[in-house]
Image 1: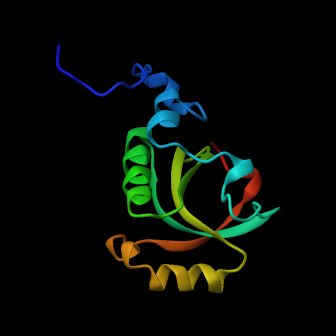
Image 2: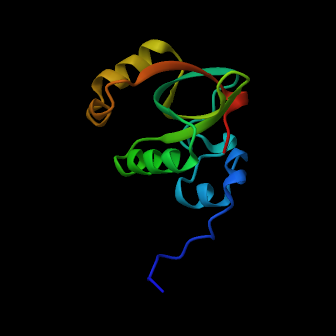
Length: 130
């Protein structure tokens, strides 16, 4: 057998729709709502973040969140469901109290230059998944 790093067994594909598949918790380590940002409390209600991407496949989400975290960014994902598009997983960076703060972060962060389609998005903390 090929040597692989210890990881939880791959879950069946139907578990992708779950909020937190076991392998996502291990690899992407999405942040729980109560500790979105350890240095300041999670904003109540709405906050702003930079949306980096939106994916149907959890594997893509894990990959991107992993890359962003290696670049030192506060990356996390939120599950979004709609009747037309089905389930999407949106990848975000940062949490800001207003759009100007988020826009400055997007403009000034060199790592985000690799993601030219990124944009500021209003996020409801009630939707934040882990």
